[in-house]
Amino acid sequence: MKKLVLLQTVVPDYRKDIFSYLKEELGNGFKIYSGNAYFEKSITIDKSIGFIEPITNYYFLNRKFLFQFGMWTEVFKKNVIVLEMNPRILSNWLILILRKLLFKKTVVWGHAWPRGGSESKSDVVRHLMRKLGSEVIVYTKTQAMDLQVKMPNKIINAAPNALYFKKDMATSFNSERINHIIYVGRLSKPKKAFFLVKAFHRILNDIPGSANLIIVGEGEEKSLIENYIIEHKITKRVLIKGHVSNIEKLKEFYSESLFSVSPGYVGLSITQSFSFGVPMIISKDENHSPEIEASQNEINSLLFETDNIASLAETIVKVYNHKLKWIAKREEICLFCRTTYSTEAMGQTFLNILK
Image 1 (tube, rainbow, N blue to C red):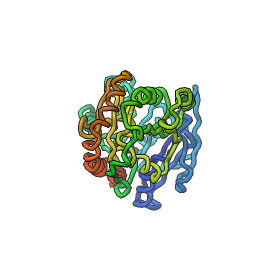
Image 2 (image 1 turned 90 degrees about the vertical axis):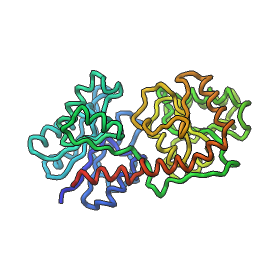
Image 3 (image 1 turned 60 degrees about the horizontal axis):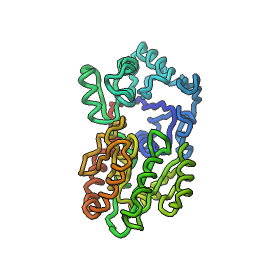
Image 4 (image 1 turned 90 degrees about the horizontal axis):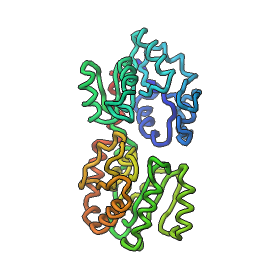
């Protein structure tokens, strides 16, 4: 029987559930290779995942490009290999060409389009990578449908980006404990966490005194945020928790949060928030990741004017003025995510490509 072999730049902690699921389902029929760190150095391997096969990532030209070593014997086997659909991983090009010549099934997995979108000039390069792959896996159903129009003869699969098993998706309804705003993500300029802190500072007198801003993450803006909250004496209202991967701790934070916020572009944090029934405030005109597909304005999210600090501040106040309305939506939000964005749903796509 053919094995499913995944080659990853790095396997971070947020991928633990999906790869554990595949290992549980396939046993020795599943192998995964990973380097120690991503192009962005702060994204590192989760060493608690005991079944990862280590390989070497060799970065060059200021970490713009990557070549991987340590997995080349897999290239010539009859197994199904899944590669990242990232043109900057030069070794993947060589693997795709070799396996196409050998008539072996190789699947490319990733974003359907570059960050610039489907009309981006750089999509010419990504399109060549898609053509070399036997099949394509993308992150959302919308991307799959759009890409199918461009490539009508290619098998396009959707594996909605998930973080948790269905059993771990649960929400809370205790209105006395649900008081806070939460941000989970990197503390970087594109994510605009510092912008959120300044907006929250503006409205401290307009929201309940028990309402805090919980910040979960690490990044280059952490010291900037820490200095700001110390200077303005709001350390008791803005709580910086650092990076947290433990699901029980994250559940605790979300169970006490009325809303999460994405002050910059949306990423995986949107499905994480919805997994726990917590709606999200989203910047309207960012170059969002595909996960934005999960947003339904006024149902599980609210939009504010991008880079408008007054608009974000007003939106936060608005949710506190309608607190009970949003708490009542939590079960519906959680159920929607459990149905569409579970580890089981995502994993099934990978199991299907073995058939």
